Image 1 (cartoon, rainbow, N blue to C red):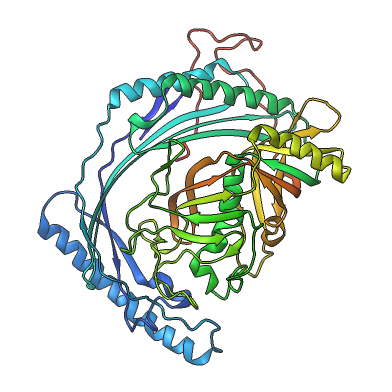
Image 2: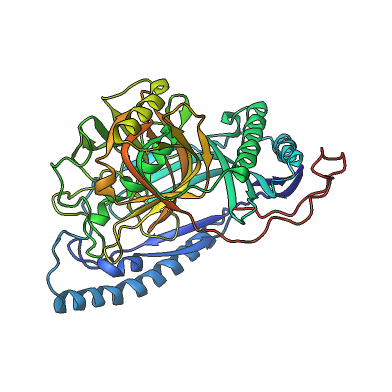
Length: 510
Protein backbone atom coordinates (compact mmCIF):
# COMPACT_ATOMS: atom_id res chain seq x y z
CA UNK A 1 0.00 0.00 0.00
CA UNK A 2 1.15 3.53 -0.84
CA UNK A 3 -0.39 6.56 0.84
CA UNK A 4 0.41 10.19 0.16
CA UNK A 5 -0.70 13.62 1.32
CA UNK A 6 0.24 17.06 0.01
CA UNK A 7 3.22 15.88 -2.00
CA UNK A 8 4.79 13.50 0.53
CA UNK A 9 4.41 9.83 1.31
CA UNK A 10 2.61 8.87 4.49
CA UNK A 11 3.46 5.23 4.06
CA UNK A 12 4.91 2.70 1.65
CA UNK A 13 4.24 -0.78 2.96
CA UNK A 14 4.70 -4.21 1.47
CA UNK A 15 3.06 -6.95 3.52
CA UNK A 16 3.38 -10.69 2.86
CA UNK A 17 1.12 -12.87 4.95
CA UNK A 18 -0.76 -16.15 5.02
CA UNK A 19 -3.84 -17.01 6.97
CA UNK A 20 -6.24 -19.94 7.06
CA UNK A 21 -9.89 -20.55 7.78
CA UNK A 22 -10.80 -23.98 9.11
CA UNK A 23 -14.52 -24.46 8.46
CA UNK A 24 -16.17 -27.37 10.21
CA UNK A 25 -19.72 -28.65 10.31
CA UNK A 26 -20.71 -31.38 12.75
CA UNK A 27 -24.08 -33.06 12.81
CA UNK A 28 -25.80 -33.56 9.46
CA UNK A 29 -26.63 -31.39 6.44
CA UNK A 30 -30.18 -31.15 7.79
CA UNK A 31 -29.09 -29.78 11.17
CA UNK A 32 -25.54 -28.80 12.06
CA UNK A 33 -23.60 -26.56 14.40
CA UNK A 34 -24.08 -23.46 12.19
CA UNK A 35 -27.85 -23.42 12.59
CA UNK A 36 -29.42 -20.06 13.43
CA UNK A 37 -27.51 -17.90 15.88
CA UNK A 38 -24.71 -20.50 16.16
CA UNK A 39 -23.48 -19.83 12.64
CA UNK A 40 -20.20 -18.27 13.78
CA UNK A 41 -19.21 -21.58 15.42
CA UNK A 42 -18.41 -22.98 11.98
CA UNK A 43 -15.06 -21.28 11.42
CA UNK A 44 -11.77 -20.77 13.24
CA UNK A 45 -9.02 -18.64 11.73
CA UNK A 46 -5.32 -18.17 12.28
CA UNK A 47 -2.07 -16.94 10.77
CA UNK A 48 0.09 -19.41 8.86
CA UNK A 49 3.88 -19.41 8.49
CA UNK A 50 4.95 -17.54 5.35
CA UNK A 51 7.81 -19.89 4.57
CA UNK A 52 7.56 -23.17 2.65
CA UNK A 53 8.15 -25.43 5.66
CA UNK A 54 5.29 -27.90 5.16
CA UNK A 55 5.62 -29.34 8.66
CA UNK A 56 5.26 -25.88 10.21
CA UNK A 57 2.17 -25.13 8.11
CA UNK A 58 0.67 -28.53 8.90
CA UNK A 59 1.24 -27.99 12.63
CA UNK A 60 -0.72 -24.72 12.63
CA UNK A 61 -3.54 -26.25 10.58
CA UNK A 62 -3.67 -29.19 13.01
CA UNK A 63 -4.00 -26.81 15.96
CA UNK A 64 -6.70 -24.73 14.24
CA UNK A 65 -8.66 -27.87 13.34
CA UNK A 66 -8.55 -29.14 16.92
CA UNK A 67 -9.67 -25.75 18.22
CA UNK A 68 -12.54 -25.56 15.73
CA UNK A 69 -13.79 -29.07 16.57
CA UNK A 70 -13.89 -28.16 20.26
CA UNK A 71 -16.07 -25.15 19.39
CA UNK A 72 -18.34 -26.93 16.92
CA UNK A 73 -19.37 -29.91 19.06
CA UNK A 74 -20.85 -27.96 22.00
CA UNK A 75 -22.43 -25.57 19.51
CA UNK A 76 -24.28 -28.52 17.93
CA UNK A 77 -25.51 -29.61 21.37
CA UNK A 78 -26.91 -26.11 21.95
CA UNK A 79 -28.55 -26.14 18.52
CA UNK A 80 -30.28 -29.46 19.23
CA UNK A 81 -31.48 -28.24 22.63
CA UNK A 82 -32.81 -24.95 21.26
CA UNK A 83 -34.53 -26.72 18.38
CA UNK A 84 -36.27 -29.06 20.79
CA UNK A 85 -37.61 -26.39 23.14
CA UNK A 86 -38.44 -23.56 20.74
CA UNK A 87 -41.47 -23.21 18.50
CA UNK A 88 -41.18 -24.72 15.04
CA UNK A 89 -39.35 -22.58 12.51
CA UNK A 90 -41.21 -21.34 9.46
CA UNK A 91 -38.41 -22.33 7.08
CA UNK A 92 -37.27 -25.88 7.87
CA UNK A 93 -34.69 -26.08 5.09
CA UNK A 94 -31.42 -27.97 5.71
CA UNK A 95 -28.41 -26.09 7.02
CA UNK A 96 -26.08 -27.15 4.21
CA UNK A 97 -26.68 -27.96 0.55
CA UNK A 98 -25.09 -30.79 -1.35
CA UNK A 99 -22.97 -29.56 -4.26
CA UNK A 100 -20.78 -31.17 -6.88
CA UNK A 101 -17.08 -31.09 -5.89
CA UNK A 102 -14.98 -28.73 -7.99
CA UNK A 103 -11.34 -29.05 -9.03
CA UNK A 104 -9.29 -26.30 -10.60
CA UNK A 105 -5.65 -25.38 -10.15
CA UNK A 106 -4.96 -21.86 -11.37
CA UNK A 107 -1.48 -20.49 -12.00
CA UNK A 108 -0.39 -17.57 -9.88
CA UNK A 109 1.30 -14.75 -11.79
CA UNK A 110 1.54 -11.44 -9.97
CA UNK A 111 1.26 -8.42 -12.23
CA UNK A 112 4.47 -6.34 -12.36
CA UNK A 113 4.40 -3.26 -10.16
CA UNK A 114 6.88 -0.37 -10.38
CA UNK A 115 6.88 0.83 -6.78
CA UNK A 116 9.32 3.70 -7.33
CA UNK A 117 7.32 5.07 -10.26
CA UNK A 118 4.07 4.91 -8.31
CA UNK A 119 5.61 6.53 -5.25
CA UNK A 120 6.47 9.45 -7.49
CA UNK A 121 2.96 9.58 -8.97
CA UNK A 122 1.30 9.41 -5.56
CA UNK A 123 3.45 12.35 -4.43
CA UNK A 124 2.56 14.37 -7.53
CA UNK A 125 -1.14 13.61 -7.33
CA UNK A 126 -1.42 14.40 -3.64
CA UNK A 127 0.60 17.61 -4.14
CA UNK A 128 -2.19 18.93 -6.36
CA UNK A 129 -4.29 19.50 -3.24
CA UNK A 130 -1.70 22.01 -1.98
CA UNK A 131 -3.21 24.58 -4.29
CA UNK A 132 -6.46 24.57 -2.31
CA UNK A 133 -6.34 26.11 1.18
CA UNK A 134 -9.94 25.15 1.91
CA UNK A 135 -9.24 21.43 1.48
CA UNK A 136 -8.42 20.58 5.09
CA UNK A 137 -7.87 16.85 4.62
CA UNK A 138 -6.70 15.02 1.51
CA UNK A 139 -5.04 11.70 0.79
CA UNK A 140 -4.24 9.54 -2.21
CA UNK A 141 -4.01 5.82 -1.42
CA UNK A 142 -2.99 2.99 -3.75
CA UNK A 143 -3.78 -0.57 -2.67
CA UNK A 144 -2.24 -3.41 -4.67
CA UNK A 145 -3.14 -6.98 -3.73
CA UNK A 146 -1.88 -10.25 -5.20
CA UNK A 147 -3.40 -13.30 -3.58
CA UNK A 148 -3.46 -17.03 -4.10
CA UNK A 149 -6.43 -18.73 -2.45
CA UNK A 150 -6.36 -22.47 -1.82
CA UNK A 151 -9.44 -24.45 -0.82
CA UNK A 152 -9.70 -28.17 -0.07
CA UNK A 153 -12.62 -30.05 1.45
CA UNK A 154 -13.47 -33.58 2.47
CA UNK A 155 -16.14 -33.51 -0.27
CA UNK A 156 -13.37 -33.61 -2.89
CA UNK A 157 -13.11 -29.93 -3.82
CA UNK A 158 -9.60 -28.69 -4.59
CA UNK A 159 -9.26 -25.13 -5.86
CA UNK A 160 -6.29 -22.83 -6.32
CA UNK A 161 -7.51 -19.39 -7.33
CA UNK A 162 -4.96 -16.63 -7.92
CA UNK A 163 -6.20 -13.06 -8.15
CA UNK A 164 -4.82 -9.53 -8.48
CA UNK A 165 -6.49 -6.22 -7.84
CA UNK A 166 -5.47 -2.58 -7.65
CA UNK A 167 -7.53 0.17 -6.06
CA UNK A 168 -6.79 3.89 -6.06
CA UNK A 169 -8.68 6.06 -3.57
CA UNK A 170 -8.52 9.86 -3.70
CA UNK A 171 -10.27 11.52 -0.76
CA UNK A 172 -10.68 15.20 0.09
CA UNK A 173 -12.65 16.98 2.80
CA UNK A 174 -13.56 20.50 3.79
CA UNK A 175 -15.86 22.13 6.31
CA UNK A 176 -18.57 24.73 5.81
CA UNK A 177 -18.84 27.74 8.09
CA UNK A 178 -21.73 26.10 9.96
CA UNK A 179 -19.51 23.13 10.86
CA UNK A 180 -20.79 20.64 8.27
CA UNK A 181 -18.03 18.34 7.02
CA UNK A 182 -18.10 17.88 3.24
CA UNK A 183 -16.45 14.94 1.51
CA UNK A 184 -15.50 13.99 -2.05
CA UNK A 185 -14.10 10.58 -2.88
CA UNK A 186 -13.05 9.10 -6.21
CA UNK A 187 -12.09 5.44 -6.51
CA UNK A 188 -10.65 3.49 -9.43
CA UNK A 189 -10.38 -0.29 -9.70
CA UNK A 190 -8.37 -2.45 -12.08
CA UNK A 191 -6.71 -5.89 -12.09
CA UNK A 192 -3.29 -4.20 -12.14
CA UNK A 193 -1.83 -0.72 -11.76
CA UNK A 194 -1.46 -0.50 -15.54
CA UNK A 195 -5.23 -0.50 -15.85
CA UNK A 196 -5.68 2.70 -13.83
CA UNK A 197 -6.34 6.04 -15.58
CA UNK A 198 -3.43 8.15 -16.78
CA UNK A 199 -1.91 10.64 -14.35
CA UNK A 200 -3.33 13.57 -16.33
CA UNK A 201 -6.84 12.17 -15.97
CA UNK A 202 -6.38 11.60 -12.25
CA UNK A 203 -5.08 15.14 -11.81
CA UNK A 204 -8.15 16.48 -13.59
CA UNK A 205 -10.32 14.45 -11.19
CA UNK A 206 -8.54 16.04 -8.24
CA UNK A 207 -9.10 19.50 -9.69
CA UNK A 208 -12.80 18.68 -10.05
CA UNK A 209 -12.98 17.35 -6.48
CA UNK A 210 -11.46 20.54 -5.13
CA UNK A 211 -13.81 22.69 -7.22
CA UNK A 212 -16.80 20.67 -5.97
CA UNK A 213 -15.75 21.14 -2.36
CA UNK A 214 -15.34 24.86 -2.87
CA UNK A 215 -18.84 25.05 -4.34
CA UNK A 216 -20.29 22.89 -1.56
CA UNK A 217 -18.86 25.16 1.14
CA UNK A 218 -20.83 28.05 -0.34
CA UNK A 219 -23.98 26.07 -1.12
CA UNK A 220 -27.11 26.50 1.01
CA UNK A 221 -28.36 23.69 3.21
CA UNK A 222 -31.30 21.92 1.59
CA UNK A 223 -34.64 21.53 3.29
CA UNK A 224 -36.60 18.27 3.61
CA UNK A 225 -38.26 17.46 0.30
CA UNK A 226 -40.65 14.96 -1.23
CA UNK A 227 -41.09 15.09 -4.99
CA UNK A 228 -39.63 14.22 -8.40
CA UNK A 229 -35.95 13.34 -8.51
CA UNK A 230 -33.37 12.25 -11.06
CA UNK A 231 -30.47 9.97 -10.16
CA UNK A 232 -27.38 9.80 -12.36
CA UNK A 233 -26.30 6.33 -13.45
CA UNK A 234 -23.62 6.09 -10.75
CA UNK A 235 -26.11 7.26 -8.12
CA UNK A 236 -28.70 4.76 -9.37
CA UNK A 237 -26.16 1.94 -9.12
CA UNK A 238 -25.46 2.71 -5.45
CA UNK A 239 -29.18 3.12 -4.80
CA UNK A 240 -30.02 -0.33 -6.21
CA UNK A 241 -27.12 -1.97 -4.38
CA UNK A 242 -28.34 -0.65 -1.03
CA UNK A 243 -32.10 -0.63 -1.42
CA UNK A 244 -32.67 -3.77 -3.49
CA UNK A 245 -29.50 -5.87 -3.65
CA UNK A 246 -29.12 -6.62 0.05
CA UNK A 247 -32.75 -7.73 0.27
CA UNK A 248 -32.14 -10.31 -2.47
CA UNK A 249 -29.38 -12.10 -0.54
CA UNK A 250 -30.52 -15.65 0.21
CA UNK A 251 -29.87 -15.96 3.95
CA UNK A 252 -32.11 -12.95 4.65
CA UNK A 253 -35.11 -14.92 3.42
CA UNK A 254 -34.62 -17.56 6.13
CA UNK A 255 -33.47 -15.68 9.23
CA UNK A 256 -36.57 -14.93 11.30
CA UNK A 257 -34.92 -11.79 12.68
CA UNK A 258 -34.79 -10.37 9.15
CA UNK A 259 -37.55 -8.24 7.65
CA UNK A 260 -37.88 -10.71 4.71
CA UNK A 261 -39.12 -7.98 2.39
CA UNK A 262 -39.15 -10.18 -0.70
CA UNK A 263 -39.23 -13.69 0.77
CA UNK A 264 -42.77 -14.51 -0.36
CA UNK A 265 -42.80 -12.39 -3.50
CA UNK A 266 -41.34 -14.91 -5.96
CA UNK A 267 -43.39 -14.61 -9.14
CA UNK A 268 -44.71 -11.19 -8.16
CA UNK A 269 -43.94 -7.79 -9.64
CA UNK A 270 -41.52 -5.89 -7.39
CA UNK A 271 -40.18 -3.38 -9.96
CA UNK A 272 -41.72 -1.60 -12.94
CA UNK A 273 -42.07 -4.03 -15.86
CA UNK A 274 -39.39 -2.29 -17.91
CA UNK A 275 -36.64 -3.13 -15.38
CA UNK A 276 -34.65 -6.35 -15.01
CA UNK A 277 -31.82 -7.19 -12.60
CA UNK A 278 -29.09 -9.83 -12.80
CA UNK A 279 -26.08 -10.51 -10.63
CA UNK A 280 -23.26 -11.85 -12.76
CA UNK A 281 -19.79 -12.37 -11.20
CA UNK A 282 -18.58 -13.94 -14.44
CA UNK A 283 -18.56 -10.59 -16.30
CA UNK A 284 -15.17 -8.88 -16.14
CA UNK A 285 -16.00 -5.45 -17.51
CA UNK A 286 -18.78 -3.29 -18.87
CA UNK A 287 -18.40 -0.28 -21.11
CA UNK A 288 -14.62 -0.60 -20.85
CA UNK A 289 -14.71 -0.42 -17.03
CA UNK A 290 -13.39 -3.40 -15.04
CA UNK A 291 -15.93 -4.70 -12.51
CA UNK A 292 -14.83 -5.20 -8.91
CA UNK A 293 -17.31 -7.99 -8.12
CA UNK A 294 -15.86 -10.53 -10.56
CA UNK A 295 -14.74 -14.01 -9.45
CA UNK A 296 -14.65 -17.58 -10.82
CA UNK A 297 -15.54 -19.51 -7.66
CA UNK A 298 -17.20 -18.25 -4.53
CA UNK A 299 -15.75 -18.76 -1.05
CA UNK A 300 -17.56 -22.09 -0.62
CA UNK A 301 -16.07 -23.59 -3.76
CA UNK A 302 -19.16 -23.19 -5.96
CA UNK A 303 -18.72 -21.87 -9.52
CA UNK A 304 -19.81 -18.29 -10.00
CA UNK A 305 -23.10 -18.05 -11.88
CA UNK A 306 -25.16 -15.44 -13.65
CA UNK A 307 -28.38 -15.16 -11.65
CA UNK A 308 -31.48 -13.53 -13.12
CA UNK A 309 -33.08 -12.22 -9.95
CA UNK A 310 -35.73 -9.96 -11.51
CA UNK A 311 -37.09 -10.32 -15.06
CA UNK A 312 -39.41 -7.66 -16.48
CA UNK A 313 -40.15 -6.46 -12.96
CA UNK A 314 -40.98 -9.95 -11.62
CA UNK A 315 -38.91 -11.55 -8.84
CA UNK A 316 -37.39 -14.85 -9.97
CA UNK A 317 -34.51 -15.81 -7.70
CA UNK A 318 -32.23 -14.98 -4.78
CA UNK A 319 -28.44 -14.83 -4.37
CA UNK A 320 -27.65 -18.16 -2.79
CA UNK A 321 -24.78 -19.59 -0.77
CA UNK A 322 -24.82 -23.20 0.44
CA UNK A 323 -27.42 -22.29 3.04
CA UNK A 324 -30.69 -23.51 1.48
CA UNK A 325 -33.96 -21.64 1.86
CA UNK A 326 -37.50 -22.72 1.09
CA UNK A 327 -37.85 -23.59 -2.61
CA UNK A 328 -34.15 -22.82 -3.27
CA UNK A 329 -32.09 -25.83 -2.25
CA UNK A 330 -28.71 -25.27 -3.91
CA UNK A 331 -26.05 -22.61 -4.24
CA UNK A 332 -25.82 -20.36 -7.28
CA UNK A 333 -22.25 -19.31 -6.57
CA UNK A 334 -22.81 -16.28 -4.33
CA UNK A 335 -21.42 -17.55 -1.00
CA UNK A 336 -18.88 -14.85 -0.10
CA UNK A 337 -16.95 -13.72 2.96
CA UNK A 338 -13.84 -12.02 4.19
CA UNK A 339 -11.37 -14.28 6.02
CA UNK A 340 -12.51 -15.25 9.49
CA UNK A 341 -16.26 -15.12 8.86
CA UNK A 342 -18.80 -17.62 7.58
CA UNK A 343 -19.92 -17.11 3.97
CA UNK A 344 -23.44 -15.87 3.21
CA UNK A 345 -25.24 -15.04 0.00
CA UNK A 346 -23.79 -11.74 -1.24
CA UNK A 347 -23.86 -9.49 -4.28
CA UNK A 348 -21.13 -9.62 -6.91
CA UNK A 349 -21.82 -7.57 -10.05
CA UNK A 350 -25.41 -6.30 -9.76
CA UNK A 351 -26.61 -5.11 -13.16
CA UNK A 352 -29.85 -3.21 -13.79
CA UNK A 353 -31.20 -3.00 -17.36
CA UNK A 354 -34.19 -1.19 -18.81
CA UNK A 355 -36.43 -1.50 -21.88
CA UNK A 356 -37.98 1.95 -21.37
CA UNK A 357 -35.22 4.45 -22.03
CA UNK A 358 -34.66 7.95 -23.30
CA UNK A 359 -31.31 9.48 -24.26
CA UNK A 360 -29.38 10.68 -21.24
CA UNK A 361 -29.39 14.19 -22.72
CA UNK A 362 -33.19 14.29 -22.38
CA UNK A 363 -33.44 13.08 -18.78
CA UNK A 364 -33.15 16.55 -17.25
CA UNK A 365 -36.09 17.79 -19.35
CA UNK A 366 -38.08 14.71 -18.29
CA UNK A 367 -37.46 15.74 -14.68
CA UNK A 368 -38.66 19.28 -15.38
CA UNK A 369 -41.78 17.95 -17.10
CA UNK A 370 -42.61 15.79 -14.05
CA UNK A 371 -42.01 18.71 -11.67
CA UNK A 372 -44.43 20.86 -13.67
CA UNK A 373 -46.97 18.05 -13.77
CA UNK A 374 -46.94 17.77 -9.98
CA UNK A 375 -46.90 21.52 -9.42
CA UNK A 376 -43.69 21.39 -7.40
CA UNK A 377 -41.33 24.41 -7.20
CA UNK A 378 -38.33 22.31 -8.19
CA UNK A 379 -36.97 18.78 -8.57
CA UNK A 380 -33.73 17.26 -7.31
CA UNK A 381 -30.86 15.90 -9.37
CA UNK A 382 -28.43 13.56 -7.60
CA UNK A 383 -25.15 13.56 -9.50
CA UNK A 384 -23.02 11.50 -7.12
CA UNK A 385 -23.49 9.34 -4.04
CA UNK A 386 -20.76 8.36 -1.58
CA UNK A 387 -22.53 5.31 -0.13
CA UNK A 388 -25.37 4.36 2.13
CA UNK A 389 -26.83 1.72 4.38
CA UNK A 390 -30.01 -0.25 4.73
CA UNK A 391 -31.85 -1.82 7.65
CA UNK A 392 -33.07 -5.36 6.99
CA UNK A 393 -33.85 -6.64 10.52
CA UNK A 394 -37.47 -6.67 11.58
CA UNK A 395 -36.80 -5.15 15.03
CA UNK A 396 -36.28 -1.82 13.25
CA UNK A 397 -38.14 -0.05 10.43
CA UNK A 398 -37.45 -1.54 7.00
CA UNK A 399 -35.78 1.62 5.76
CA UNK A 400 -32.74 2.78 3.83
CA UNK A 401 -30.56 5.86 3.90
CA UNK A 402 -28.44 6.82 0.92
CA UNK A 403 -25.77 9.50 1.27
CA UNK A 404 -25.59 11.83 -1.74
CA UNK A 405 -22.70 14.23 -2.30
CA UNK A 406 -23.58 16.43 -5.28
CA UNK A 407 -27.26 17.43 -5.24
CA UNK A 408 -28.88 20.13 -7.38
CA UNK A 409 -32.24 21.86 -7.34
CA UNK A 410 -33.62 21.88 -10.89
CA UNK A 411 -36.13 24.69 -11.45
CA UNK A 412 -38.88 24.87 -14.04
CA UNK A 413 -38.66 28.61 -14.72
CA UNK A 414 -35.31 28.62 -16.46
CA UNK A 415 -33.16 29.47 -13.46
CA UNK A 416 -29.77 27.73 -13.36
CA UNK A 417 -29.54 24.54 -11.32
CA UNK A 418 -28.65 25.27 -7.70
CA UNK A 419 -26.18 23.15 -5.75
CA UNK A 420 -27.33 22.28 -2.23
CA UNK A 421 -25.82 20.26 0.60
CA UNK A 422 -26.74 18.39 3.74
CA UNK A 423 -29.46 15.97 2.62
CA UNK A 424 -29.86 12.19 2.71
CA UNK A 425 -32.22 10.07 0.63
CA UNK A 426 -34.55 8.09 2.90
CA UNK A 427 -37.47 5.77 2.42
CA UNK A 428 -38.72 2.21 2.41
CA UNK A 429 -37.87 -0.20 -0.41
CA UNK A 430 -41.31 -1.42 -1.48
CA UNK A 431 -42.51 2.14 -2.00
CA UNK A 432 -39.34 3.64 -3.48
CA UNK A 433 -38.74 0.96 -6.10
CA UNK A 434 -42.19 1.32 -7.67
CA UNK A 435 -41.80 5.06 -8.33
CA UNK A 436 -39.35 4.79 -11.22
CA UNK A 437 -40.84 6.41 -14.33
CA UNK A 438 -38.13 5.92 -16.95
CA UNK A 439 -34.38 5.51 -17.35
CA UNK A 440 -31.51 6.82 -19.41
CA UNK A 441 -29.91 4.78 -22.15
CA UNK A 442 -26.32 4.54 -20.85
CA UNK A 443 -25.22 2.17 -18.05
CA UNK A 444 -22.78 3.52 -15.46
CA UNK A 445 -20.52 1.53 -13.13
CA UNK A 446 -19.96 1.91 -9.41
CA UNK A 447 -17.10 -0.14 -7.92
CA UNK A 448 -16.73 -0.40 -4.18
CA UNK A 449 -16.36 -2.55 -1.09
CA UNK A 450 -19.51 -3.73 0.70
CA UNK A 451 -19.75 -4.68 4.35
CA UNK A 452 -22.35 -7.05 5.80
CA UNK A 453 -22.56 -10.07 8.12
CA UNK A 454 -19.85 -11.97 6.26
CA UNK A 455 -17.49 -9.01 6.14
CA UNK A 456 -16.02 -6.77 3.47
CA UNK A 457 -16.18 -8.00 -0.13
CA UNK A 458 -15.55 -6.18 -3.44
CA UNK A 459 -18.69 -5.45 -5.43
CA UNK A 460 -19.87 -3.59 -8.51
CA UNK A 461 -23.25 -2.15 -9.40
CA UNK A 462 -24.29 -1.05 -12.89
CA UNK A 463 -27.37 1.00 -13.74
CA UNK A 464 -28.64 3.75 -16.06
CA UNK A 465 -29.84 7.13 -14.79
CA UNK A 466 -33.37 6.98 -13.38
CA UNK A 467 -36.28 9.37 -12.99
CA UNK A 468 -38.41 8.92 -9.86
CA UNK A 469 -41.90 10.37 -9.52
CA UNK A 470 -41.29 10.77 -5.81
CA UNK A 471 -38.25 10.68 -3.56
CA UNK A 472 -37.87 11.86 0.02
CA UNK A 473 -34.83 13.55 1.49
CA UNK A 474 -34.12 14.59 5.04
CA UNK A 475 -31.61 16.95 6.60
CA UNK A 476 -28.28 15.37 7.42
CA UNK A 477 -27.00 15.61 10.97
CA UNK A 478 -23.63 17.28 11.40
CA UNK A 479 -21.18 18.60 13.94
CA UNK A 480 -20.72 22.29 14.64
CA UNK A 481 -16.95 22.50 14.93
CA UNK A 482 -15.63 25.62 13.24
CA UNK A 483 -13.29 25.47 10.23
CA UNK A 484 -9.58 26.00 10.98
CA UNK A 485 -8.88 29.46 12.39
CA UNK A 486 -5.66 30.00 10.41
CA UNK A 487 -4.85 29.22 6.78
CA UNK A 488 -2.71 26.10 6.19
CA UNK A 489 1.07 26.50 5.94
CA UNK A 490 2.18 27.85 2.60
CA UNK A 491 -0.78 30.20 2.18
CA UNK A 492 -1.22 33.85 3.02
CA UNK A 493 -4.64 35.43 2.74
CA UNK A 494 -5.70 32.50 0.52
CA UNK A 495 -3.16 33.38 -2.18
CA UNK A 496 -1.20 30.83 -4.17
CA UNK A 497 0.97 28.40 -2.19
CA UNK A 498 4.67 28.99 -1.82
CA UNK A 499 7.25 26.53 -3.09
CA UNK A 500 7.89 25.39 0.48
CA UNK A 501 4.34 24.54 1.47
CA UNK A 502 4.61 22.16 4.39
CA UNK A 503 2.86 18.86 4.84
CA UNK A 504 -0.44 18.68 6.70
CA UNK A 505 -1.18 15.78 8.99
CA UNK A 506 -3.80 13.43 7.55
CA UNK A 507 -5.52 10.24 8.51
CA UNK A 508 -5.43 7.35 6.08
CA UNK A 509 -8.67 5.45 5.74
CA UNK A 510 -8.13 2.06 4.13
